[in-house]
Amino acid sequence: MRYGRIAAFLAVSLAVAGSTPADAHPRDDGSLRAAARGTGVRIGTAVDMSALAADAPYKQAVAREFDTVTPENVMKWEVVEPQPGVYDWTAADQLVDFARKNGQLVRGHTLVWHSQNPSWLTEAAYTPDQLRTLLRRHIFAEVGHFKGRVWAWDVANEIFNEDGTLRDTIWLRALGPGYIADAFRWAHQADPKAVLFLNDYNNEGVNAKSDAYFALVKQLRAEGVPVQGYGMQGHLGVQYGFPGTVLENVRRFDKLGVKTAFTEVDVRMVLPPDAAKVQAQAEGFGLLLRACLLVEHCVSYTVWGFTDKYSWVPGFFDGQGSATPLDENLQPKPAYDTLRETFQLAGR
Image (cartoon, rainbow, N blue to C red; front, side, top):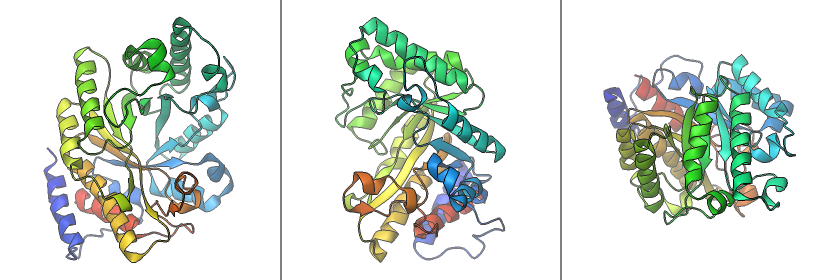
């Protein structure tokens, strides 16, 4: 067990109460990446490739602040295979090359999902056998293309409903629940060294959805299926409060022997921001990070975009936003400081 992380948790609790130790800021370059060094948890961000190409300060921040990157969209099926058998790896390759130049690992996102699939796949009347063949071909093509260059994959994304039943998707309807095990087996065959994750939202605490994942992971691993990670997205909102059983949930997956990760963290609020909302947001980010640091096999903590300038939240949640650790001018908020200080304490 990471005893140093328990000490960090206690120290952070004191910091929240206003008793931050005077030496809580060891010398470093001031980045999240430097603060996370030595903790065993990698700090990552989702990357907007248009911003990476056109916004120099954004590009510099991605390289400076993070040691893993996740593509927001450019590894999704509709992008990489816009026509049957016609692949476009251009943007995804650019991200992988950027990561390599900056000493970063890449989380691949995502292989099997109900959303952002190409129309040629979803609108045609394929037979179950044909769909199985197409899914297998897609996984082997994508994982094979990035073999040795992508550290981890979100293999199956958002497969459960809130009540713990399997989501009604093209894959479930045509192939039955066995498609999940097949996807993991195919991904493992295509790149035996990549770490393979399940990934979902609203599964951070103990609830019907995370219970379903817990049962599924136990079942699949008992069957020899190479499920190696459990990803919790971490899309929170200050207006709803935060789950109180995050640590309990992460610990139970840790005991199953799988790696855990917070994969898409942001904490939105009803606009405009005020001091109370901003402080609550910082606590939301910190809550998930502390849970990660307090277990043995939590390997990464990824924010879903780090600046409000490019956040997805305002476009999907009317009247909400300000969901990331940096504002639109790339200036840090209390959430950024909380992440940095929590990492620093854990590293000590």
